[in-house]
Amino acid sequence: MLDTLTDSFKNAIGKIRFHDDDKALKKAMTELKKSLLKADVHHKVVKDLISTVEAETKKNGVGKDNFLRALQDKLSQILTIEGVPKGFTFASKPPTVVLMIGLQGSGKTTTTGKLAYFLKEQKKKKVLIVAADLQRLAAVEQLKQISSQIEVELVADESSTPTQIVKQGLAKAKKELYDVVLIDTAGRLAIDDELMDELADIKKVANPDELFYVADAMTGQDAVRTAQTFKDKIGITGVILSKFDGDAKGGVALGLTQQVGVPLRFIGAGEKMPDLEQFIADRIVGRLMGAGDVESLAEKAAAAIDPVEARKMTQKIKKGQFNFNDFLAQMEQMKKLGSMKSVMGMIPGMGNMAKQIGDMDLENSTEIKQIKALVSSMTPKERENPELLNNMRKRRLATGAGLNPMHVNRVLKQFKNAAKMAKKMSTKGGMKQMQDMLAQAQGGGGMANIPR
Ligand SMILES: Nc1nc2c(ncn2[C@@H]2O[C@H](COP(=O)(O)OP(=O)(O)OP(=O)(O)O)[C@@H](O)[C@H]2O)c(=O)[nH]1
Ligand SMILES: [Mg+2]
Image (cartoon, rainbow, N blue to C red; front, top):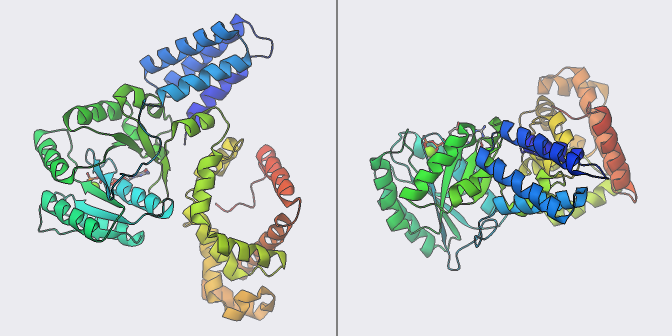
């Protein structure tokens, strides 16, 4: 997600040698400046960053440690707005009301769904979505689909007006004790008075705690400019950059907070519901400097994995009873973590591996589809005990699942390997072996076992 930026910092860090002099620092700064500009970071932000880091490093004595400290401090500063709390905060008196605004097609509706999913799954909140976009014919239908997919309640009524539906939503939220209300609004092609008036009216009745401006990251510095206009005309409390997966450069994320004077709060990097990440300065700084973001990963995993189920699973694995039902259940859990690439990006030292994996898609990968097709053709007994499958049954299953027998054998072999590996991992020292294996894969491109 932040690959280009991370690479820029890593290269610069590499240029500072152990016994350092001004020349090494100069070289690192020149390198950093060039790559940040190339990554689309605004030139004023780059200039400020470079001059501060250079001056601070010199002041404290040129050397890697001082350079890293100066860089870390400066990055934290440019990603933070003094006095603004970190992460998503809830109003002292529920419901927390969030208004989602932005230009047409910027990703408001999708992001509303992702945010609802994040609050429900990770923060365990009761979330209500209000469909206040009554401009576009299909808008309500789109939200209906999203909210039923993530199992979040929706308030919608095509024959109503935006302010009426907001009032209705808020009344329901108060009565039924919702924690959060997310209001999706209509977008326009460009900023015009009509849009601003409508938003101002909605804002008046909604009295929101948060106004999130959703901007398309692919529009680069335009995202910053339009955010500024929305801030001046309506007032915003945060920015969400969507479609970050399509933006290879990503520099806009680094400068935006200082440029607009409002913090970047979330980044959307994919079309699916788990593809939303909190933008928390301290964590991002760690990631930019190549240290990973274990905190966010742990949060995601804790939300996705049911501890009771996990314990049961570990017991089964230890006893060698891991079966196809468990295999499928594990895969379903993995899906909740979001794209494999973003997960890997959070693990320290795994940034490169994330790149190799590309976007491994658990839902749409052919292999996983094959496995699912195969398992659903099995009898319950066979699912519990794969050993029951003889050649005739395998041929039958292949036909039933629309696969050839070779596929079936491959899937069964993969399953056996997975079960074996899981058993190994659950023993003492298993984690160490896993790490070694990962390190090997990282160095040697041995990714052949990971389905694409
Ligand atoms: N790749 C990618 N696509 C995204 C992301 N967020 C949204 N999209 C896609 O962008 C398109 C527009 O998203 P919407 O959520 O409908 O945008 P909107 O701002 O609600 O649009 P209007 O209601 O017409 O103003 C859809 O096809 C989304 O799937 C993202 O983070 N990554
Ligand atoms: Mg929309």
